Length: 232
Ligand code: ATP
Image 1 (cartoon, rainbow, N blue to C red):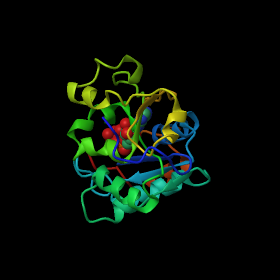
Image 2 (cartoon, helix red, strand yellow):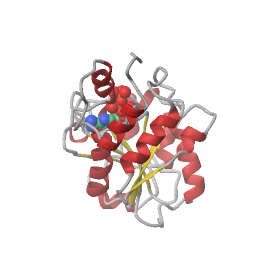
Image 3 (cartoon, rainbow, N blue to C red):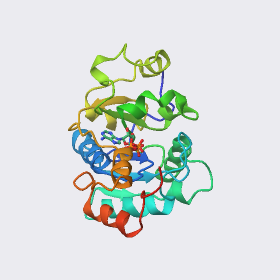
Image 4 (tube, rainbow, N blue to C red):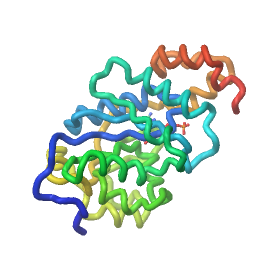
């Protein structure tokens, strides 16, 4: 299986891409981005809030609120950048469209790394044009508490179609992400954090504090705008 992208020469360090509903963004997302950066020697990570996530019900907060919270969370970390492309788009937030946009903007030689938690990775075959993702970016998969372990136990723990798609793409050496612009799959370990946005929404809804699960700036925003108080 040959990647569609050029393999001869790449340009620059890989750039990480972390998409999500971020409803709200929390330390699970931020550690995932930071640890991907550390483990995979990325130039930085773009946090990409989904405008209209196709795989779930309407989020508990608006796209503008989720974008604002992502910006607050990223503040002060020079390796994080927030990309508002999906929020600004009228289309559904399909990752394939975002990768096409970024590929067009950054050129065919820039290595891109789509960062996914184990739950998102397992669900990949339900994504729009999922097989095309591999031709536009590498995929990095982190462990997540409560979900089957990734990587080293492959093959056998993934659905047959995902297993098949990863066949011949799986690598363990992050330096190989520089050899080509996309097309490889790399598992990496992050500090396990059993934090989810749903947990945070539940805590707020029931009047309990989610403090220390997410940045104080995001928590203050939630309080100021009365988010999640009566949404579920
Ligand atoms: P929800 O609880 O509303 O489903 P979530 O916490 O899973 O939300 P998302 O915005 O759906 O957050 O996740 C975006 C990405 O971040 C996904 O790839 C997901 O796997 C990953 N992710 C979220 N939380 C964690 C975590 N605690 N550890 C590892 N990966 C995570």
